[in-house]
Length: 124
Image 1 (cartoon, rainbow, N blue to C red):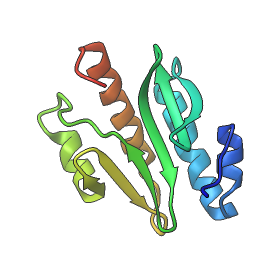
Image 2 (tube, rainbow, N blue to C red; image 1 turned 120 degrees about the vertical axis):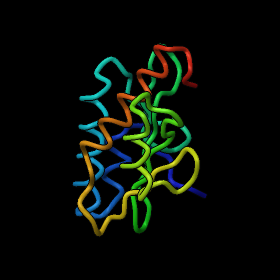
Image 3 (cartoon, rainbow, N blue to C red; image 1 turned 90 degrees about the vertical axis):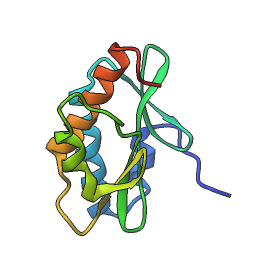
Image 4 (spheres, one colour; image 1 turned 90 degrees about the horizontal axis):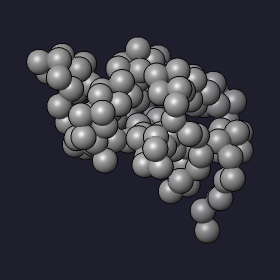
């Protein structure tokens, strides 16, 4: 049975220290980009909700961190998509390898694009 977590702190603490550092950086970046979002655990991973609806989730894995969802259209003539492409695992998932530096400015831009989509009525 999978481990259950009540808080994001518990979730982060369940990983090796070197992964905890990256998870905390991801967490801080998401919180800074979406300060009005409520942080909780949903679907077994850190989730940020805005007005009762999930905005973004992230998760730690053996060799990467994942961010879900990623914006389909970013309103920047494809600039965000070009930057995201090396990390895109699926249409709506970005994977950031643990053996590389976490691209925190990109994470912030992804969250900001999701916020814009939500404001425009396009997001989930």
